[in-house]
Length: 599
Image (tube, rainbow, N blue to C red; front, side, top):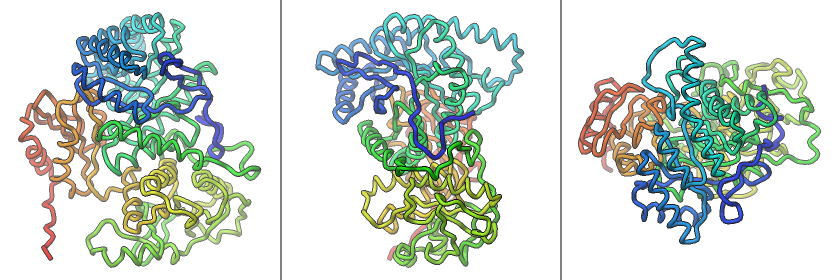
């Protein structure tokens, strides 16, 4: 199976066109040769028509091309009529997407008023009670028949009204049937989506796209790769567009890095027709990040011409469908750190950065340089030239791509691994975020995105034993960025990790305020992962990697989870952060914050 033509050469996946709304009046065409479409979602109550219109106009003003609005009930879905009518009266024809979970009747109502309906196969017509059950083939087929019976009316209505559909699978909400047969896996997510696509095709309805969302960038990348490969296996007319996003990415730098790793990696491999950056911030800020990220892709993928040094019949130097860190021997990085083998991925800095940050590093600090680039026993190679066995003395020699190689970093390092594999070498690798250094100073927000895409993509491939960030000119900022990339990529945990949803009309508390409150109390808990969810619509499975969950259960009431298991219910919101701290303490994960003496 292949998910792209080449791991070295950018070629955008050829997808069929899907029409959303009237392109002559503000609608969009996804796929084909059309530019990647930017989308976002409202954060207000869908029954608040005025606020819904206001937020939609604010999104359109900053370049949002598709706006999603939640419709948790038939009543909410019916109010989409008023929202859309007011928008059209104001001359705004941006396509509106109704976000549907659990309620087929709400989907049927919403289809009357909006240009697209999003359904989640895990909870649209399937059961999710976390029941362990062995499904026989006959029982499995019978369940599929029941799903088809519930889903077909929507398909026929969308076809009749010339609407579009998004089949949006979430890592956290796979049905019991899928979980029991495939487990909580990328394969389960893909198969769940394909079941619904087959029903669409049975009725000759093709105006749909797929999404495969997870809060874990590595899982998300694997899912989209596997989906693309499976679609290619199904046949050339299965080339439906893809919507990319890392769900519940969080806020600030962490949310941007997670999104850049997941979305950026796939865009650089030619996948993706629409994107959303899900941030626990005001929605218009998501579009700014979309714009910045899309603007980087050409320079992160452009190859010099000619590129005859690239393999004509390329094989993948890594397994694209199952994450596994590339096996390397352990080697000395510096007097205080080793890399490779079972060691964690290390952080290297330049001498100039070290001289600026070293005086400020305290003995117990987790964020600190672990090697100085100019002092490393490092072999710098040009992967465009054929390597010979005698070019590398031994497998413990740390290697990297030399500066000035005229290739994008992702291509260059993948090519380096391919060359090492050809020679049977397992040398540990130092990743760089850029191969031309010092020619220009990047804005911090751009340096962050470029470093996250380049280094994060390679880490998601399983490549890399140490990393060097130089695109960010600030010494302290570059060091912190390196560690944040490692944490977002799941390679290290040096601070509290937060999975936080971006808010929508289902949200039962103010996510930004509560997230800030929880961070104030818990951000010193190194290695603890906390999920902050406005509701449980995407399923407890979305918190599969989290240690603890803070979830809206009802207006003013919070439920607390340990992993995917609810432990405490209906806690008054005023007390919920304290009870979360108590729960962390009960499970032995709490430490008191260090008191820094006043100077």
